[in-house]
Length: 427
Image 1 (cartoon, helix red, strand yellow):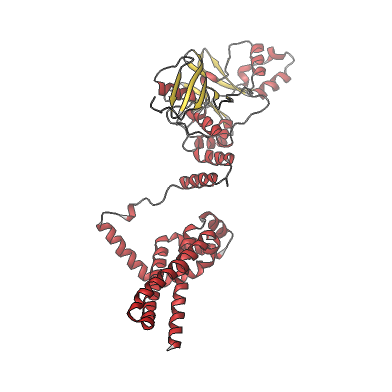
Image 2: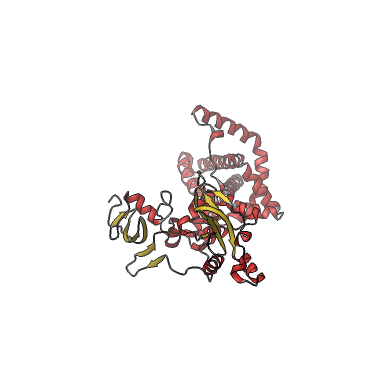
């Protein structure tokens, strides 16, 4: 009699251990890093290849785990009830329920799942081989169960084949970056850089181009001496030239070509034929995405393009540096204008140039002002105010107080922004 009780107890113990194995395996295989497994598999790690194989058939894997887990749990509960009935009579059902509930929750659920969630990758690698065998053994049953489950779901009006259960990969990556940044595992600079790469397909040239009002252009009709002077005074190495009207761009001059020509002629600036030095302009539509334009720059081995609208009108220019700055942030050299466009004040406000883009402002400050209605901060204020504000006017939008500092004609040149949580955004 005693030996039979011991055997029954050992069988229940084994079943509890199996239940813990299934619970821990489910947690580990669900929480494991797909990226790390993929990299290990590339390095010919057999266990990582098994993990990837299991995750590729996720529905079959979960069905096998649930089937195995329920089988051992039900069997353990039935045997425990039988054992306690023999020991305590009819009240053994109550004792069996209480004991098995505590044992299963602690030793078959909480402990294995806690361990697995703390060590998901290593645990997944350890259990992959056994789980492959279990999935293979249970394959006929899991296929039948999945068929029945899908049939019931169709009767309820849900088609599993049409369900979009997978988010786009870039959203998964962006979510992972933001999550790790919130835990300080990824710095703000790294988050901005990685996010900038993901944004290249969503942004167009209109979002990053230098507007035509800010372009440095030279009239080809000027005297060579004046042209040389303007080129040497410019901080730019590539300069557009126009003829007759300012939007009629006829070519681009590279400062290096001009310097070579100056060195080759004894007559100085007078002996330089500017038209012979300029190269044909490259026009690109404003709707081109940054990813497409980056690839185009690489294919043409070019760094400079002129942006036009749907009617062919000149909108501005874009350079390779403008696109790279969307990834790595502002790139300055010794010839760039060092005037700051964002100046912090002691009271927490910021003095901002109206031409600063919303993306740059949000990136610098960590704010989340909308960037879908306007490209620049001045454009956002005009959009929300439904008018061109005058200096001194104050507006409150999105929990921030905007005060207009200066305006040149119809353009807001400088404004002050300060968070204002006490005033409703509806003001």
